[in-house]
Amino acid sequence: MDLLLDIGRIFVNPLLYIALIAAIMLGYFRVKRERKIFRTRIVWGWTEFSGFLKDGLKYAVIFSVIFAGAGLVLPLEWLAALSIISIIMVISGFYSAGSFIYLAASAVGLVGLFDANGWSLNLGFTDFNGYAIAMEWLLPVALLAGALVIAEGLLISKAGAASASPQLEKSSRGLKAAVYGSKRLWLIPLLLVVPGSLIEEAAPYWPQLPIGESSFSFILFPFVFGFQNRARKTLPVYLFPKIGKMTWQLGIGIVLLALLGLLWAPMAIVALVLGVIGRIAITVYFEQKERHGKHAVTPKAEGVMIVDVLPDSPAHKMGLQRGEVIRKVNGLAVSNETELYQAIQVNAAHCRLEVLDHNDELRLRQHVIFRHDHHRLGLIVVN
Image (cartoon, rainbow, N blue to C red; front, side, top):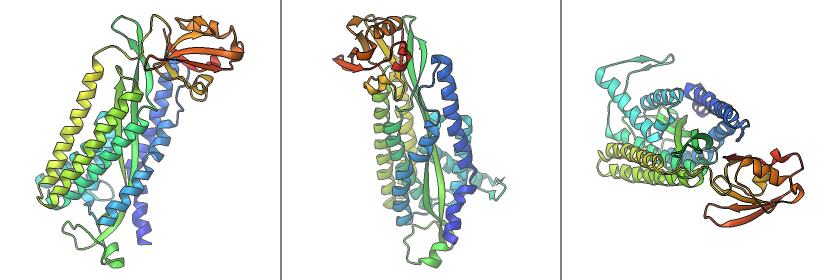
């Protein structure tokens, strides 16, 4: 019963509900923007909310087994500080600063600041007084931060491009061009060991890395982190996996540095500091790279450039993708949206498309499109 109560504490953390609402609003505002620009919804409105709940579940199970099984103990004061920092991040909507390494390091700074100055904050259910900075509890914090940065990178690689939403802006030549923004929140609930009495009473031989407490317990805590980036020069399908790869590699580096803390305690704080610097470097590198150069999706002299493809549409079933160029339809060369749909009606029952893919290789696609229902093709193009 005590274990169930400790696990149930996740439902009294306001961070969980604030993040749930924020994930819903992400989808709402994205759909609203898509309808305003393109007069249609491109991606399902509940995509961000569904991903918030489901994407991190396998990492939750893996890391819960690892950290709870190893008995890595985290102070409740740091978890409280992390909740405060995370809530500020979620409410602000500034998810570029939502990487977990930023949140973890900021929470360390917050507990140290409150402790050093003797400050106190009434949270309603308890008083937050900070916590003395000590290497014995910074080690599990650094290990946890590294693990969640690994998960962050893998999530960016897998889901960052899928929900990237197009917007239009002017290119250097004054033409309409597309950019793709991805803004996500992810939840990874972890079962953690914290100061308490449950484990000592039920399993006295459970391994723990102590932080000065004589008894320990479990808690299920909602770790929330965010991601925000924009693809301009590179298509999302190529950009976000690159960002994700560098991020999970950084996470591995953080974990390895933190493990050296077992030999030399200050390496835990070194791991956190270098992790923050490394994550900033990744963000700045890709932002600078995307800021200069031509847009990946902009009007072409020959053909119609695809901005996006609506899910479950004929275009989606034909395998058409963002950034590809439709050169011919039913044997007729097309150079704008009007010519595209006029050519479709020539022989809608056997609509044949010649498409130039991302490698500038020509491929053929065919699908049935009903006459006078050309909008069912499901393409968003740029002229």
